Length: 98
Image (cartoon, rainbow, N blue to C red; front, side):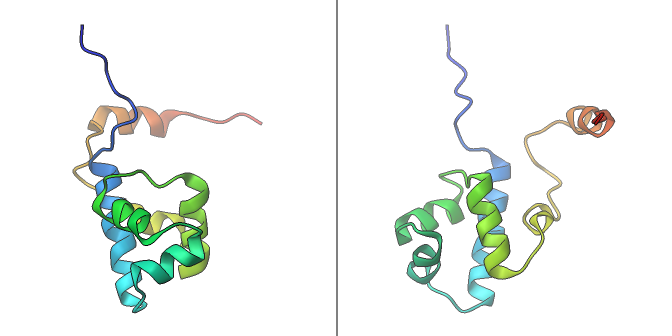
């Protein structure tokens, strides 16, 4: 029986990493400089940008604050994620009751 590894990275992680790389380069920063701000080594920034490691929500928020962008910046033009269209439609139907 094959175990489904839910922790592996996806095309979404790769897309978010590419968007991070774009921002970093637009601001003329090295991976080391960005890593210093985020509290990680340049290797970790490289892994984020290559989509090898996922970016946690709290770290993504930190990048948003640093670059002064909204979180949706990282998901713009995300058309071919590994999430099926039906799944996206189901998520859109969820209502939060407070």
